[in-house]
Image (cartoon, rainbow, N blue to C red; front, side, top):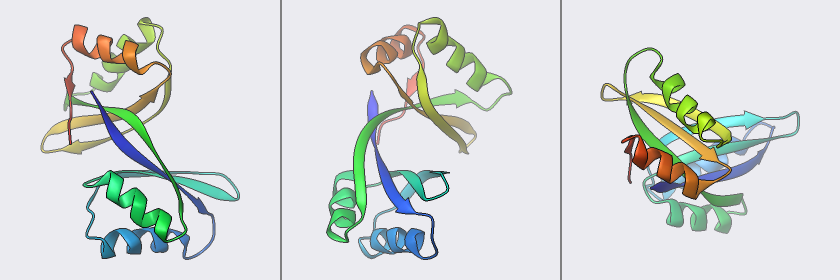
Length: 135
């Protein structure tokens, strides 16, 4: 099972991130997880939030470039090496992970990632009895 993630394109200059955050704040949309990948000129701010479709609409109305994509979120035991074990399952199945980020929530590791083959990744998750997170 995948979950929606917003990819927000922002320039690397003062004030652009706060514009995004203010739009979400005014819309009363909760950010659950986020990460920023940057280059010299722009960044991609990826977020998992409480209302991704509405967040996307609000950001577009504010003139902010945004796209929704499907990512996986799986729950792992909070023990060293669990992320490595999970990634190895996908690698051994021939699935490339495009990007990944993680965090701890209520004593569990949460691994969010995008792959080059969602259908195959979903089968690997099911076959290995990994716990998918749903919003």
